[in-house]
Length: 122
Length: 107
Image (tube, rainbow over all chains, first blue to last red; front, side, top):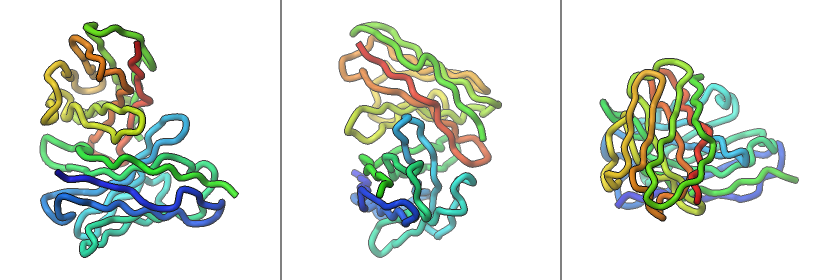
């Protein structure tokens, strides 16, 4: 079955760039009409959708983060990535990647990674 | 952004109980409402999509209802593995997607 796995540094210094990768296994990242999303959950337990990428490379980014976020995809490696610049303590969170089925009658995150904790601290 | 408000924020229940969680959207979202279950150390799990459609593999004791601004997630006959935190999420029209603040179901 399709599985997602996040990877990247667990500790980022303030003002530096947070970079994470989500590797997809069990299926090609290009198969089907799929978006691939990044979502985070802060210590306050609120979820925040960060953004998503389609296999074409088109992206949608949360306006609250648009100036700092880049999402990219590497179909040869079957993974997609997140870059968040100018990190601050407010970016400390559990980061999840998820498959986003955006289809008529079904628009939901049907598969999630287990998440990776990122702490922004000096 | 569309604000999602869940209630209650937590509840205590027993095995066999019927549990209902509500989610209210700050504007009409038609039926574009999903429910997720979250347990510590595990990936979130999609339970219900489109307000009332059961995701494949999810037990039928879970059901969803509502449309417009008011939605419910009901668990009939609560099982030990159902003690978790539940989140609603809207996927209506204009991005960004937004989530409710969660409802923790414990003993």
